[in-house]
Image 1 (cartoon, rainbow, N blue to C red):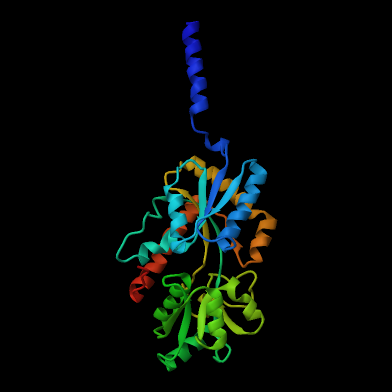
Image 2: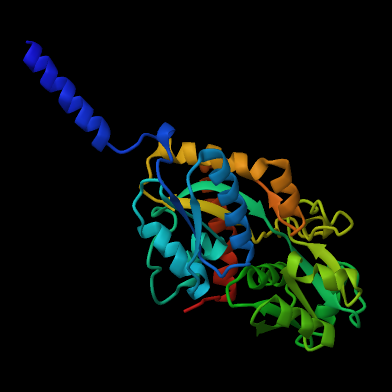
Length: 325
């Protein structure tokens, strides 16, 4: 009996050593946080503030790895393909996490973001700002729509990449109002803002962080923000929603995700730590200076939000025949 008990104890010890760590023991080694864009981008900023706090509190290295390419698809796909053990997580944006399901018409995404990427938390919202050239004498969204309708086909707008938020938001506004404009594509916010200043295009719904300096400098005029409520750092600029277009809402949000098969207890554990990092007052202040508003919700709330986003943009994509392939 003693020998039998000794063997059982020995096997139990071996199993304890070999078994994967439980959720409460995470992390026991270094963790990768994949950023699917270049260093210095907004996703990189969010990844690094999370990494720095977790490393300081949890005593393991949290290493941010930039994996840019294909509009964030390459790095986001790497998150989906990683082992579901809590040691690879990542940040990403609406396209790779939701919208590309709608935007690929002739080929499939290399992963299903709703099943192969598990929601950890919606980290931040980033408003877009509807700005107009100073020579365009409008100060509100209704005035802009009325002017565009009076001169059908005369006006154009800047967008940053087909199928991106700047495209979808403007298409939603135009579809809801029956206004007709011509889209012109630019490679990034700086080029789009410059085009509006010069009058090459008349208006655009651009990331607030990329155009706020020109608004404050009087080079372009802001007439609306795209979020559901006024942005905390832009309290004097009304939303599109409150100017007579309810439901016209969009955010260049950033989410934190893990491989799809990550066990729920481990997801919940990671969520608690990431949320704690994001809600620190100094983190909220740092991100707010870059026009990011911290959300830091639960995995279930973020997953529900992703599905709401899919439903929000589906009719816009279909009505305007928007695609990226």
